[in-house]
Length: 153
Image (cartoon, rainbow, N blue to C red):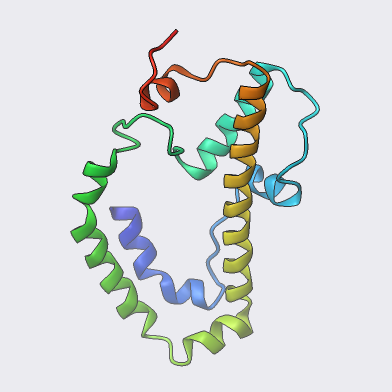
């Protein structure tokens, strides 16, 4: 929560393109070629690439709920906090007059679009790699099998 509050307070600096969130290398690579076949199709290599994307994107939908990745019920309990942080962010974003134009002129708008596209490409890449893993007959991690309601091997 503290991280999100900090992000809300620095929103005007992001709008001025003075503060940028660094793009993880795994997402930058995914943006370049989300459907590229990896040079090494071994099960450990596929698992390693999926883990890099998990680290950059967070847990996928088929991952079991944990403390770091709460389930839908736990996520629902944080909605009030998120609403408060959203209201604070809207207030700090309102400090900058003509915010939309400022974001375009400083390049912050383009950077945000590029970042969003990289996250989308990373999500697609992870799904593609999971499909390759399944098609190769590689075993999925136990937490994935358990989350899907399957019994571990």
